[in-house]
Image (cartoon, rainbow, N blue to C red):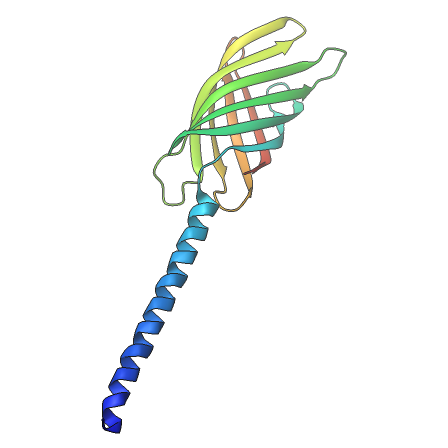
Length: 162
């Protein structure tokens, strides 16, 4: 075998090694990206403000995937009101993520049960928000209209964990 016959073979072997290594690296990156953005249960807390009642609120939420773009989204809010009565709400919503480029925007709606000094009333929720979709800690901001006898608007911001 002459010395020039070995060079093309070594070049082919080196090229195959480089291609296999880059393919394996791409598969690892793809797997990491899929894990980081995969749906799964998320829970978290939030702080907010009710503009119609001028009250601060604190709450917690849970997001349970039903389908690729749809989550079951129960939450709880406690309102810091003046006086001796306590006001709190339980929300049972669905959250939908339209097909957008980064899928950070969502909208939804559901039922709001608001408990105060006058008892418990049921209302309709309409909500929209932005939530980061990468990593285990996901910050979000959400606007919610509570439609009933008196329409309420609140804005909350918080963090969800996967």
